[in-house]
Image (cartoon, rainbow, N blue to C red; front, side):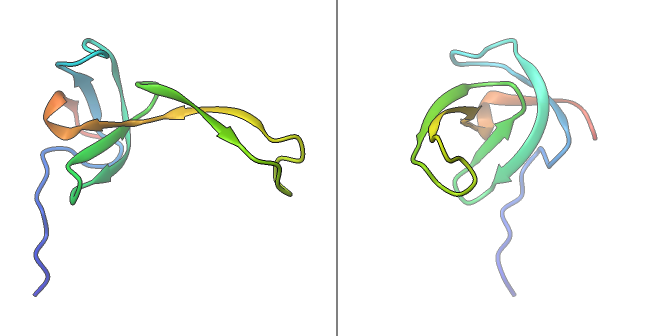
Length: 80
């Protein structure tokens, strides 16, 4: 039997950030990483990622995307 780590939030839940640099921000959970105890929340902790040229992006460039937040810093507002 595989050990599953239980978390208080899951994908598509509405959460609010209760501590850290992004305190007070709300959003929907896009991904949960239980083994790292992190979540990715829509529109919170946007980071700039530099991408090389590829078939998808012929010019390369800078992409803005969400970064992970520790799961203890988010609180459930409503279930998705």
